Length: 343
Image (cartoon, rainbow, N blue to C red):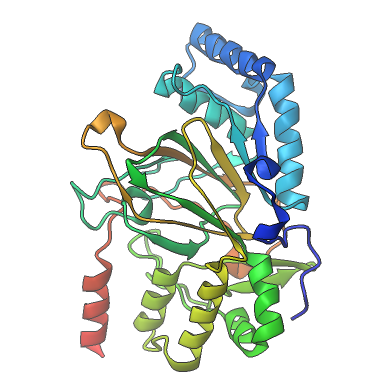
């Protein structure tokens, strides 16, 4: 365990304000995107028909190439702003977003639905056990299952829904300085429960411990979802407690600290892009509008690009295999209760 030598180590004090991490699209770049929409209309191409080569927008393409370098070798995140979602049809926004994402990586399935373009909105009216991205509850710092994550805001909530972003590498170095014994335990990792999203024939729990921190070719990466770790350890009969729980709490406290956690609300027309292996993201709970067409709605991309970062096999990126007849829903409390009853 050594201090991280990486541009992705940042703190809140490194930014004077949002403009320091915002890429604001110009009128000429928006005109290119309008032209792309018209071209896709002429060719009759829906989102699933659009490939990397269909995006013939040199100005925005150059911006995305620079963004990729920033995600891989720079601070690891940026907010892109100025997309005119107020005048685009939702279909237009989806096609533009998908095409931009294709310049950064390949879209992956994000749930058993097979949704390569995820819709982040509250569905708990219909399903109280909906997965996190389909619910309105608070989400604590975690990572996803991708190399690059994109979140594109179409509509904001009535209140709440504040985005939180933390450099996982800065958290690593704080723990190294203050509690290296905790950091050592995080390197060991935890068994992770797949919560009903395992492939056919696959065990519901990972056969190996998934390290919270790991290093490959000198690059430190992070992989963490608290509920998955709690359930995985319970299923193995090794519940998290004592020293391990202290280590987890110290990790999450650092990730949520005022010094390390950047907090902002994505407004309509803004996209947050980040390197998933160097960042922890979270969100406050939100209250939505009553009218369905006003409710909070973000589009999500999980992108695979093996060139992004070398990683150990235990945290390899994998999409979630579609499963006919299943929904992205899991009753965590009931599952934990059943596990504990068996013990």
